[in-house]
Image (cartoon, rainbow, N blue to C red; front, side, top):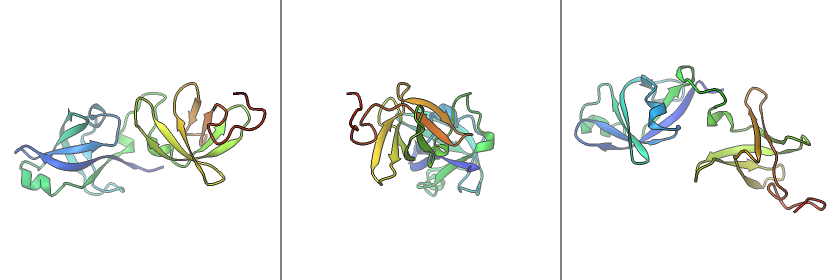
Length: 176
């Protein structure tokens, strides 16, 4: 498990006070606001104090310690900021998306392994898991209750109940 997780990426400056506009890679600006510092590297390098976070359209604006003007902020554009897993407080039943990558997707009834999760995207109201199937093909799996039965991070698997054809052509005998 990674100790530091990608949280956001600085895409531009905002205003004259040194704020950074960031693309959020975590749930929300409110979640990010729960941290007192961010890190500039995947191993916890370059800690920097997080003074303020506020939502801005589908992004967020950050005020960081020591960054009080646009010139200093410009030097951080393109930076990926990380959070420390140990500092995160997730509600019960929630997990980090990074922990899903590489997990096998297993039929809750039969135990059949459909593949492993390669990516997680958020095109709409629910997450979509891109699953690499054993034959090398990809399947898009909607992470919604009728199909997603359990995310078992400690057990290292995701239990699903797919409809016929979700992970490839429907097999003979599958119900329509």
